[in-house]
Amino acid sequence: MSTSPHHRTRTAPAGATAVAGRRRNPLGTAVRNVGIALDTAARVIFLGRDGVRY
Image (cartoon, rainbow, N blue to C red):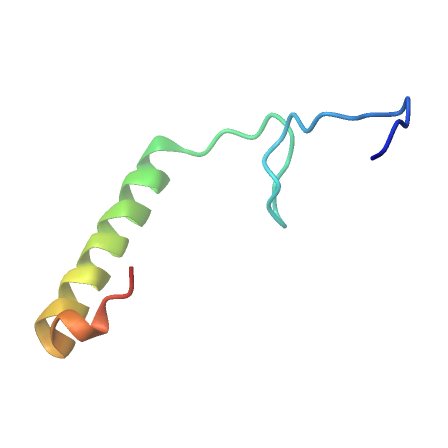
């Protein structure tokens, strides 16, 4: 068990491109979400339920 006095808490997301205080553009987020939905729908149509991983 660690008893180090230098315990740090993470305040930013732990992504490779995460920048503290960065906010995504709402339009960009909407476009990304629509793209994900269309991709998922295409996988279900062309590959059946086996094409979608949970």
